[in-house]
Structures are given as C-alpha cells and as structure tokens.
Length: 269
Image (cartoon, rainbow, N blue to C red; front, side, top):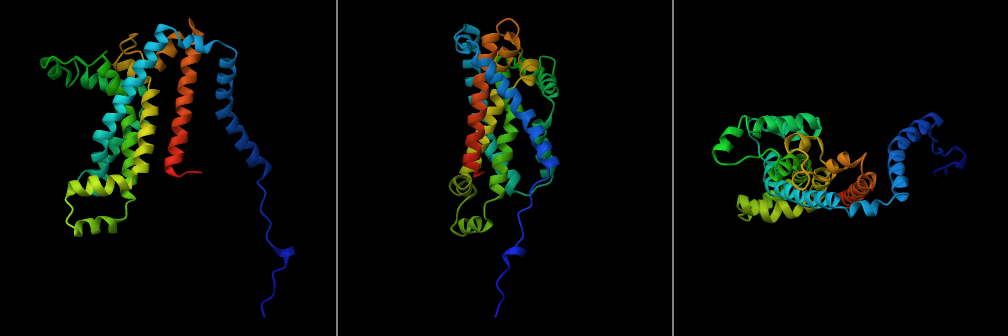
C-alpha cells in the first residue's frame, strides 16, 4: 500500500528574492519610462496637426514606399538564400552565414560608410555603375538599398531558422515522389515555414521603416527625395516638435503592431 503524500511536506513555490524583483523592475522601468514619456508628451500636443504638414506627409509616404520595396526585395532574394544556407552543404557556408548576419549588429554609421565606399561615385563599384549611367548615392534607390542592407538579414535569419526546422522526413517523402528542387522549394518548404516567413517579413519591414544611420550617410537627408521619417524627426526636433512627435508616434505604433504580429505568427506567449 502506497502512503498518501503528506500535504505538509509538499514543496511550496519559491518566491523570488526581493533583490531580483528590484533589479527586474529597474530594467523594466528603463524600457517603459521613455515610451511613456513620449506618449504623455504627445497627448499634450497637436501631434496630429504635425502630421498634416508637407514635410511629414512626404517623409511618411517615402518611408512606407521605400520600406515596402526593401522588404519585397528581402523576401524575393532572401528566401532562396535562407533555403541554401539552411539545407545545402558547401564550402564557405558558415562564413557566408556570418557575413549575411553581420549587418544586424553592425553600427549604423559603419553600415552607411560601407555602402558609400562600395557604391559611391568614387567607391569600389561606383565607377563601373557610373559608366552605365547609374548613380546611387543621395537617391531614392540609395534609401531602399540602405534599408535592405540593414533590415534584410533579419528576414534571412528568420526564414533560415524556419527551413532548418522542417522535418527531414518530409523532404525525403517529397524526393521519393519525384519532386524536383524547385517543386521541393515552392510546394513543400515555403508553405511549411509560412509563419517564419511572415515573422521575418514584419521584422524586416519594421527595421527598414526605422532605419536612420546608414540612410543619412548613403542617401542623405533631402526632403521629398531621401528624407524618411527617422530623418524628418531628427530635422524637426527643435524647430517643429509637433511634427517630430507625430512621426515618432507613428513609428512607435508601427513597431508595436509589428512586434505583436511576430509574436502571433511565431507562436510566442
């Protein structure tokens, strides 16, 4: 006969130490207080009126267009790249994976300088582009390229993790049925990692929408041409605070929605 457990001896849930709670609360306040201050300041100002001005509307339209193009290019070009990095074995794969991920942690100023040295008029590839009549710096194309450079790796990283998580037995079954490489990629792998693709897409778009450092160095800050919302905030901070607040609220809202969608599609709590 088995003895019934003694309720007095049942382990009690351990309560976190007061020190741990205090440290966790301190860091939480570091994250929360600046956002709360931004929203509080916006609630007491005419930030909607600031969005009605021509500079804000131009920056908003340019940011939405350029970030959409950068994200579309990341999905179009990054999905095959992520698939190759996840499923193929070849010499230099780890080095390529490192180089693809590097812009995620690269300082924005270094990213912008790298783009300028590569594709500037006197850059490594700039002269060849000039002979073809292509000039990238300080153009809308430079904005898209800067956003793709800093935000595209986020999509590739998410899609790569998704491809790696696909059951190898599913791939073997498709091979047994005679699926080609393209059929395997298009009809088996991509639908299987839809959540990872959507999460990476949203992360890439949100990062591109908020890109600042690489853009200002490579594309400049030309109103109506290369001035995105982060650049407009920087320019309007002292002279037009309502415009800066309005654009900041828009970016904050977009970032919050993006994070919520990533958690939704990623299955996070």
